[in-house]
Length: 141
Image (cartoon, rainbow, N blue to C red; front, side, top):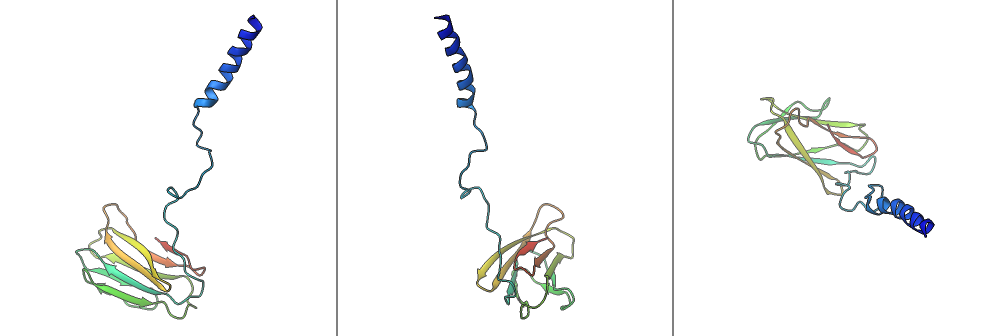
């Protein structure tokens, strides 16, 4: 009888901790936890960038080595063509002359249009550029 009680106590001691332990390693889908899917275009695709100023201040937009700084009034939209798709690693810079930080919200409006909505940001340094890589990926810097 004492061997039976001993075996029962040992079995209970081994099984109880594993039944109440919630391991974060359980596999599952990430449908609600993965975050937004990254925005990407086909490599070499001609992309049009639509920039909208959603701040109460004038912002400055520039595509380095091909445009001078362009002032963008509050609420104004600007469309910039990215050429024939042969430009490598294209950047679009933006800033507020007063030095306040900005937040760039990007979206794929349609097959060949990248939407960039510039809003005020409360955390410095904020976003300062959109980077279109050769492989079609879009990064906010």
